[in-house]
Length: 553
Ligand code: PEP
Ligand code: MG
Image (tube, rainbow, N blue to C red):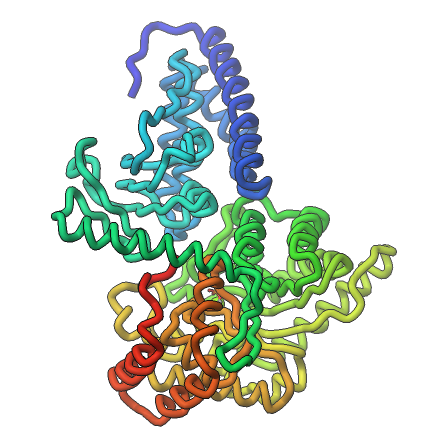
């Protein structure tokens, strides 16, 4: 804590007011810088900072402390520390991460109070930034061209700073304990964010291997860029649709640059996460409209809110649950908060006026849920009509197939909806009872488990037979070995993180559908994951060892 000299309450309150005003101006500047470099949406974190700066509860606490005879600096540190500790104690990883925002604001007000100003970290040379923690204002003010990577000791992978780094294409690893103690500025570092590995002054053979990988990747990426606008087609001419999974507005540009044919999954919870209260209908409409217009006539599948599990909102209290992934999450939260749900659907229907939109409901496990969702769509439509607001006529309705119960109810669901989105990230975790985020059970979470393949095959076959579109939007679509089987099962619509699209497209150009079909047929008869993997490895080898960069972009 800061040493206190004798202070005058009036002077200290005045100093605080000045520092708050300077911090406010600085925050507006940071918001503008991020909005110019990334997008308004990514910059909205600084809106949250502005709201904290105007939060009466927070300011009154600091003022009360000053009135008790403390200096402004002491009072500020005291209150900010209290807030940080409260956030850090929270179970919800999203709320826990808000401690970083509080630190950021506290640090900036304090630097204005002490008159030292905000020391902007200056990078002399391009390199990897190693820090104890990186806060949103650091990300906003650093020279992005010079940062080749980020390593931090503290922080969470869902932090605003890391999301910003990702949007800027800067690889980052967080939570590297004692990184600063182990790394000195002279060390030569190799940061492999794909595998989460950091090499400190590695031996020559590792350096050589990474140099070779980097060169290969650059050559391959420039080749892939050429094929960006070519159709996604197999060697023998079977057309496939490759769409993007998006969450932030800045993802639109990334998706278009990588040749995405629209959006297979728009995770709308991301923009909700960056705000400090529920966006109203008009805010949501403007946001969705921007996405729809950004894709210029290509289809955009908008999924309703999927919070809960590992995704929380700072302003919406989720209960503490022993099994949050099996708990009150996703469409269950929406159905129990019908006003919030209806408002979101109204905004989606309004955005549907500006381009082809599909409406997707997550985590469906029963027909009753689908019936209620459709009822809410009817109510939303009626509300808009009554208010005289334009809304899309018929928009296709779909459900995510990500709970095993939905697989068993697929025939019935085909009577209710227009399309399916196969959410294998969750489907695999629920099917194999293996938490998708728990490294202790990652060996059980195997997409090539024979049961997982059988279930995906069953969904694909039924959807095709019943004439329903089915798009697979789990992460597995970008893995060539798994893609081969999925394509061989008859899936022709995929949605993935956009940077993988050119690679999957190039892979597809090299495989005849007949080879994929035969590979799928063969592995569906196998009951041992090792044999499945071995067989697919052999098939891939037969396709000229196509992939040299093993883990994607
Ligand atoms: C899924 O579960 O496969 C999916 C795509 O949704 P999310 O990863 O957002 O849960
Ligand atoms: Mg899911």
